[in-house]
Image 1: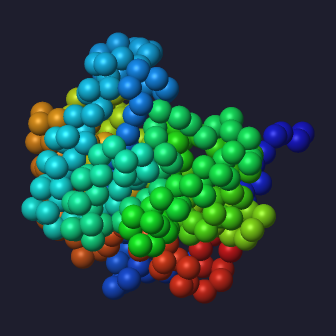
Image 2: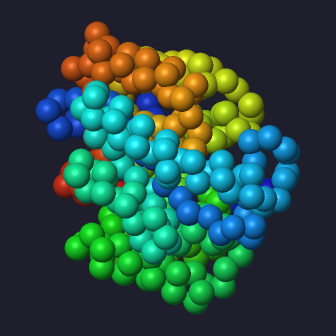
Image 3: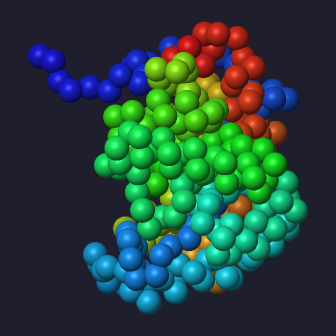
Length: 299
C-alpha cells in the first residue's frame, strides 16, 4: 500500500545514529526562543485568551500588545538576571511600528530569527511566487536593520506549502524551526540542497499550553522542568537538542512570570548542568554545519 508521504527526510530511529558531542563535551543543547509579534488591529488571524474561536477584537489586540509593551521587558530582565542566552522570532512589521523592542535584543547580543511580516497573516496557501517574495522581503528587512541576514526561519501559523522548505533554503536560511519530528537536528532535503531542521517545541510552548489547552502558569513551568530534567538524563545516551517556545503576552504576565522564573532557576542550577549547552538555535546550526558528513541524520 502506498500512502501519501513527505519527501524531506528519511526515517531514522534515534538509537541507531552516530554519536557526537556539543561544544565543550556537552550533551544537551538547550535554548529559549521568544516570539515577538505584531498584529493588525481588527483584521487577520486571531488568538483570544477569553473566548474560544473569537475573531480579532480590540480586547485580544490589546492583550497581545501587552507583550511588547510590558511582558518582553520583564523577560529581558529575567534573562539578564540568570545570564541566559535567547533568540527571538520576530515579525518584521515591528521595525515600522514598535522598533524599540529590538534594543534589548541587540544589547544582549541575542539572535534574531525571521518570523514573517506579521502574525496576522499566514504563509499557508500562498502561491509559490508570492511566498518567495515574502521571504525575500523579510530577509532584506532584517539585513537592512541588523547588518546581516537572519540564519533561521520560523513559519507563520506553523504552516507550510509544498515548496516552502525549498524556498526557505533558496532564500539563504541555514535552518528552519518548522518540523517538530525529532530531539536532534536533522537535514531536510530541498531542491537547492540540505536545510537544517532544529527541534522547536510545539508541546512545551506557552501559547499551546496556557491558551489553547488552558493549563496554568505553574503547570507550564512544571512541564518546562520535566522536559529539562528528562532530557538531561536521556542525553547521556544520545546528544539532544531542546528549544522552549515563549511569548511575552503569555509568560510575560506577572502571575505566569513568577513560576517561569523558578523553572529557569532550576535549569540553571541543575546538578547536571555540566551536561548542558545553554545556547541559541543559530549557534546549534553553525556547529552542525561544521560536523563531518554522516553525523547529522539525513546527511
